[in-house]
Image 1 (cartoon, one colour):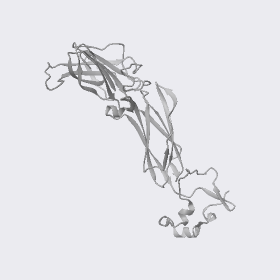
Image 2: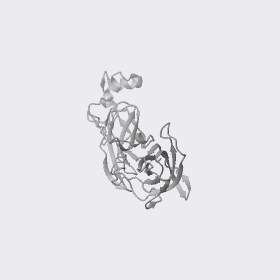
Image 3: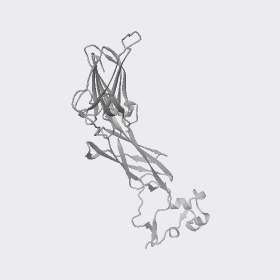
Image 4: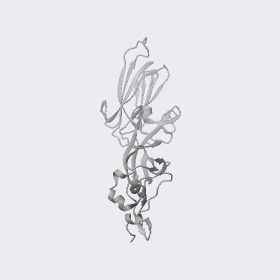
Length: 341
């Protein structure tokens, strides 16, 4: 969540503009924010009269960044959609700590903390007389000045993902196609990252493309080709993170705010070894109809002749079977494969 806050100097607060009462983009329980402002020392020699203010502020009836230069690319991309709240408070010149706690219910001075989103805060915001200090803070969902403090609080939600896979039981070097469909409730730009343990032979990562638009956000899909080489089970993880701007460059929002803002899913690919489904068409071994196995170019796999007849897999093969199937290092195909029907 982001908080934009302005501090000026006078000890009054304004909660201005039309207000809405629901985080309709992200579906969290947030209806507003409880703000607290405390005077603190600017340095060791700073003496001041203690000051504390707290109050409740509803969500703004609007969407950010909305071509507002203060918010656009600082940190949110210009095409994103975030809800939030704004608090403007006049205070004496000096330094202030500001806290904005998301609220699931507000009734006058009473409020109930949100169970979906985190507290956002700023420390030591300096207010200069006659000027307004604007603060922009982020409060993550699970999903300042005097002169004046003007605080806008924006909600940020992690992406939501789903994964489809054409087959999770493959042969050595047989490509597996995986598609991740993802969206961000705030329509932030996102980055997709893939990882595997143990490592795959090759990953051909596709490009994300928009496949729809629903509930105020783009829906994206990225399809990638994963090639595994050795017979074992691979745990593949796809992670989607939302992005904002820091120092003029797109950066993971979780790296900007120090709180997790991603979604991930780990799924298995079980790479097996068994001879391919083949049958004898006369004297020739041919693939069984509908069972042709494509292998990735340049990826070396273990064929039936190597497995049974090379001696390299003697610990895994029955000597009597090897004697029946092999003529030295040559595979007797008609002894392994049935006749085609």
